Every structure is written in structure tokens, then in C-alpha cells.
Amino acid sequence: MSGARDTILGSIRKSLKRGPLSAEQAARLEHRLKTPRANVIPARARVSGRRRTDLFVDEAERVSTTVARVADAAGVPGAIASYLAEHNLPATLKVAPDPALKTIPWSEKPVLSVVEGRGEDGDAVSVTGAFAGVAETGTLVLLSGPEHPSTLNLLPETHIVVLRRDHLVGSYEDAWALLRVMGRGMPRTVTMVTGPSRTADIEQTLQLGAHGPRRLHIVLIGGAEDDAE
Image 1 (cartoon, one colour):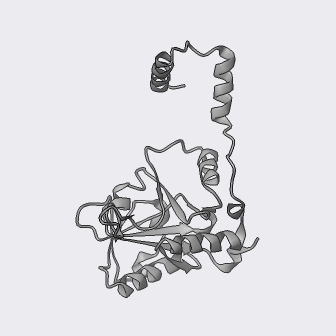
Image 2 (tube, rainbow, N blue to C red; image 1 turned 180 degrees about the vertical axis):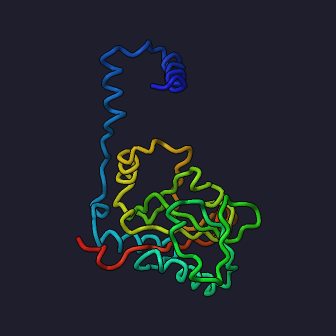
């Protein structure tokens, strides 16, 4: 265990009037942390292929997220330009410095003005990638880091996420397992986003964009051949 975690757990044990863990207890604890067991996963989340994709899209749209599907990365600029034009939004994009986004041929759509960097006050539209999409609830899993400043998730009124179909998982447990398998370590922030920001705190009237983006749009990369069971 890290020194900080030892200190925290030691304080908790002291407040509970418990002594240090025995060697056997410590070994069991370490084993449980390294090999976590999934909780009960709903049957609807245990899907793959086309059914997983359809479930993700259905659940995302159910919570006011819009989704456009393209066959490959070459279709991303056109899909984004069409979305912005449809909603009369500015064509200036603040794009995350993500290596995967750098491979997108932005120049194919000269109407788009692409600026790379973190989100700042005044940015209208951000474009980021996503670590995963959870089909169970249409949720996006976003990891903070140099290639994905968290400000891009929160400040612009319109957040566009480019997501590969092979990054879809069935359940939340699958997303956490994937993060462990990739061996990237735990980022400073894991943000799970289900639909645009909303609140009904004021007179029970639903308001979008209260604590984050007013619009959430996903460009899902993957052709029909990728949806095979």
C-alpha cells in the first residue's frame, strides 16, 4: 500500500479501536484489491456486437444525447460540420490534444476551425475522445490526463465526443475491468457522463446546461461489419 493510504486506513482503524492488520488479513485484503469481483450485472448489459451498439445508442438518445454513426475516422469532420450547421452553432472547435483525434482529417472540411488545447471560458464547442461507452445506460467514461483536459467536459455549451464502436462495453463493471487490464493506472479523475447536464432543482422545471454542457453529441466510429456478434 502507499504511504498516504496506510495513513488514512490507520486513522480509520484507530477511530474504530482496531489494531493493525495481521499478515493473513493484509494478504487477503491485497488479493481482493488486485482481483476484484464484479457485482450482479443486469442481463440487459450482457450483450455484444450489434445488440450492444443498439443498446448504447438507444440509452444515450433516451437521455437527450444525439448520436451520429460514421464508417471510419474520415467521416468525422463531415458529421460534426453537419451537426453544427443543423443547430446553427459556431464551427470553431476546441479539440483535446488526443493522439487519436490528431489522425482525423480535419482539413477535409475547411469550414471547421480547429484549435487544440484545454477548455476555457468562451469556448462554445469542444471535441474529445472517450475511454469507453457503457451500453447499459448510454454513459461515456472520460479519463483526465494531458490528452484529455477535464475542462473540455464542462465549460463549452456543446460537447462532441468521438467514440470508437470497439470501445463500447456492456456494463460499468466491464469499463472498470478494461481500465485495469490496460494497465494505465488510475487517472486523477474518472468522469461518467450520461446525457447533457441537467437539473430540476428550481421549481421542478428541467433545465439543461446548469452544471455543464447543454448539448452532448456522439460521433460513433464503426461500420456495420463491426457489429457482427
